[in-house]
Amino acid sequence: MVRLISLYRQTKNEHMKIGIDAKWYFNGPVSTRTVLQNLLRAAFELYPEHEWVIFLDEKDKDREFPFTQKNITVQYVWAGINQLSNVFVLPRHMRKQQVEVMVFQTYPSFRTSIPSIAFIHDVLFRDFPQFFSGKERLYFWPLSWLAPKADRLIATTLYVKSTLLKYKYTKRADNIDIVPLGVDERYKPLEQHDPIQVANIQKQLGLPDSYILYVGRLNVRKNIENLLRALNLLKDQQIPLVIVGKEDSKAPDLVQLLADRQLKERIVFTGGISDEALQVVYAKAKLFCFPSFAEGFGLPPLEALASGTPVVVSNSTSLPEVCGDAALYIDPSDPKSIASAINALLDDPVLYAQKRQSGIIRAKEFQWKESAQQFMNSILKATQRN
Image 1: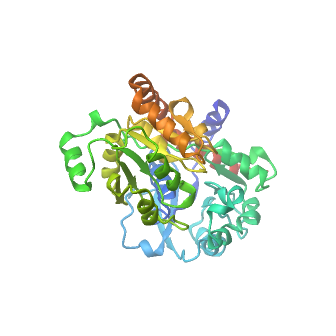
Image 2: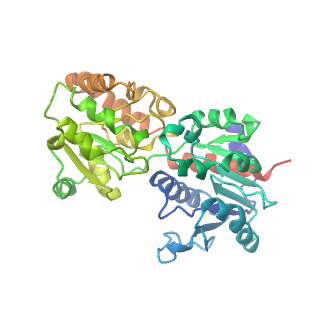
Image 3: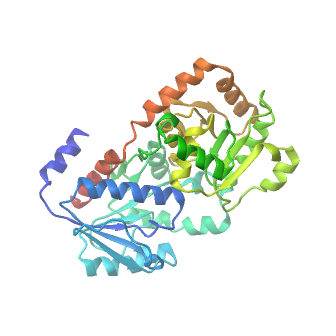
């Protein structure tokens, strides 16, 4: 880390024109959108000496990009098929804008001679193909031969780095830079929120006074089915579950699941909600449960920890790496394991208080400014290729 910061200081006054594939800034997958919005905000603040060329989806021309600094240029591009846009369309605009180094989302291009980086959030479709539709697997198929075209790869966790090496997306471990994600400072404990805003959002969403919370996409990988099974096994058969998120590909039949388990009266579905509402929903929850089978990073548990809400999370993939000792871990395939961890937190005030405090401390280790510093270090290393 010291060596990388030193490397940046040596080039602090050198101007670079950096291209960023940000086509998902407004309408991409929720997690990628969150990463782009927060990472770019921090990078623009930390590195005003560089020129930034931001490539957005042409469908978003009516959306106002929130940064208007003179060193930021916005270029709209065709993004109908993301892989084709990255490989064939972006290089033409990169040349026109005289970009010196380019950061692609997932798919780099072989049609450029400038240094390039591929930001690969995960390759879960390789280890867990059962959770992806045929269309999704086809979408990811080109990555195996496009990824090696980049000078460097960015992963968000050691887990993702290990899978990139496992499937030979690069032959060299030192070609992969880890850029951990951050948590927005607006995710904070309930006592730090405006009580009037909390009351208004609770009324608007129909939130109960105390509840278990799940936030995320509603698909089979997220394992909502076993969470519902666990709800039936809890000692407290009154505590409700609030589910925040939208149905995704390969979504479980939640209506049928609720009918089968007679849980309708205990479930609140909010659908997608605003960031402001989500911050309150996290902070007001009694606990957060995230029984996902597989994640590349796992932002929702981290946001819950920052909100002072104790977390029950799967013991798989990246999640122990992100949550550390701050969470209680479960076997996502076992509803009894999920119920046992939830019962432990609800029954033991000392354990509950310990996990609440350790969660707040753990979340502070993930700052977007630090993410932006690691991001810039990766860019610098790409420009110094042999």
